[in-house]
Amino acid sequence: MMRSTADHLLRTYLTLMVVSTAASSMIWGINTLFLLDAGLSVGQAFAANAFFTLGQVLFEVPTGVVADTVGRRASYLLGTATLVGSTLLYLLLWQVKAGFAPWAVASALLGLGFTFFSGATEAWLVDGLAASGYQGSLESAFAKGQVASGIAMVGGTIAGGVLAQSTNLGTPYLVRAVLLVLTFVVAWRAMHDVGFAPKPRVSVTAEMRDILRSSLDHGLRNPPVRWLMLAGPFTAGVSVYGFYAAQPYLLQLYGHTGSYAVAGVSASIVAVAQILGGTSAGLVSRAFRARTSVLLLTVIVTAVVLVLIGLVASFWLALALLAIWATMFAAAMPVRQAFLNSLIPSAQRATVLSSDNLFASAGGVVIQPALGRAADASSYGQAYVISAGLQLLAVPFLLLARRDSSAADRGPANDNRSANDNRSANDSGSVGDGELDDDGVALVEGLG
Image 1 (tube, rainbow, N blue to C red):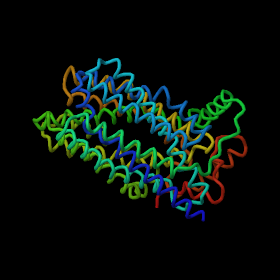
Image 2 (image 1 turned 90 degrees about the horizontal axis):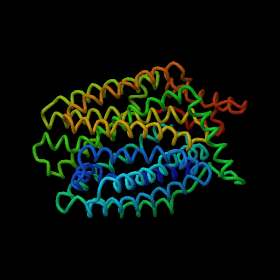
Image 3 (image 1 turned 45 degrees about the horizontal axis):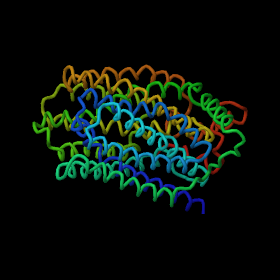
Image 4 (image 1 turned 60 degrees about the horizontal axis):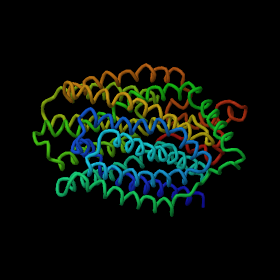
């Protein structure tokens, strides 16, 4: 029965990843082109994206608290509904050629929608699998989700580009809203909180204060988690710019700035790389003794690739380098997720994960418009070279995480030990992972 529940949870997770990613990715290949077509400059387009990440910064922790108090399912449904409304608002602003200020507000609302997802979805899966006696590993579960979302992103980005080419840039946004409604229906029917029960509420304010205090204990006050969080602004901020700047940059190299289908296909290359990165997660985790080794290597190598992307003059070579960059980044993601989740207890999981996303989003708030201005003043290529230097600023924090990390850093073979150590610490009032009972300890067993 428990095995059946775990299988059902994993299937639901994968289904949600597919439908939500298919919906979201309809615009990923053309979003920058859409903003430019609406009358925004390059700098304003990336500033609008920065307001998206600013929305994530402002709302990450409050929505994480919602997930930890009201429930993960409720948070996911609220996020889906918010994204439907903000996507339709985007479409309206494009039609009326609105000024920058309304775009900033609409982008912040999009950020709000995604914050309801960010910590809640991951926490829902981890807690549910732990409670149902899942015998696999966190990395394998996250890798499956990454592959599923990558497949959906291939279809979504190509479809969005083709639709924009054959109709107009607004059609993919309308289709996205329809698919998000479908996502809401799927989540309403299939997503139920397992392994998590909201605490009886006496005072919402007091509960939020307690959760935030505990989240600090298990987040910023927990050394390896703190260093991972502080590295996030540099890696995440650069990655968002690198993806969205690729749309106009590749079209510039291609020589036909109106070829929206080419933009969609080029974005789908990133999705294919995500699939390859997810499927290679097992090989990557077995090849390195420490998870921080994987993170350090990928940050350094992808920085070199970013420099090369900025220096080449060939569309096809830039496209190949973009695929290498995305594959390296994607291969590291399941490793980072497993490492982080193995250090966070259930009661504060969504809030701590949201805090991690907050730091990542904060990097995007500053880095995206700065690189956008650099591209405006010089070129996209020059901005890619600058982005490589910014990404390397994450290296000192990852080295500190390596220094302060526990057995959780030493890969799959040590995850059971780490989970037991965390549980014992939690019983004594220290940082721990106390939700893992005997059936749930295997949850943080490494990728195999």
